[in-house]
Image (cartoon, rainbow, N blue to C red; front, side, top):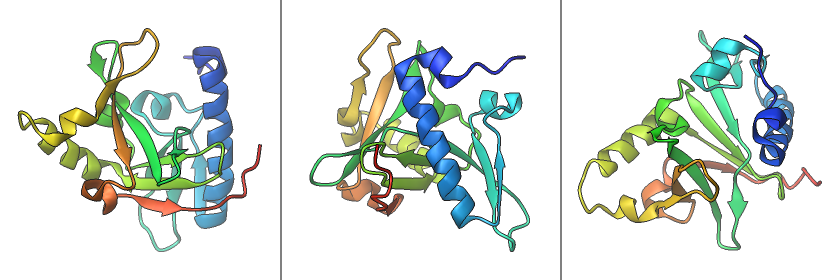
Length: 172
């Protein structure tokens, strides 16, 4: 099976995503003992991760998915996670990654979180009727009928899950 490039699949948004993955690869190489690039690995792409990383003291690799959709709004960072797309379960709920890393193309800042941990929290809240979390869900622009949950670093309910890094080194 041929892996289609992000730009081929998603146009300009795919190009931005590919640039983010490239920047993430550089960051990961400077932080981790070992980084495996799975961007052209069919199994990895189907199951929702881009890289595997580990430190020398770790027995196992951590699978990591990169998203170039972190935005600074003057108060803090916000980013969407995909709950649904084309009427099917979105990548936030189905990915087999251990961590999601969100990058800001504009500022070079990034954050990451433990995906199973945050997903469990979100699922518990989504299963409660009339819960506050339902107010954070928006339909994505475009024709994919995606439902996005917008998360902010200023929202105290999410703060403990998010690890934020300010780099300001990625200028484009």
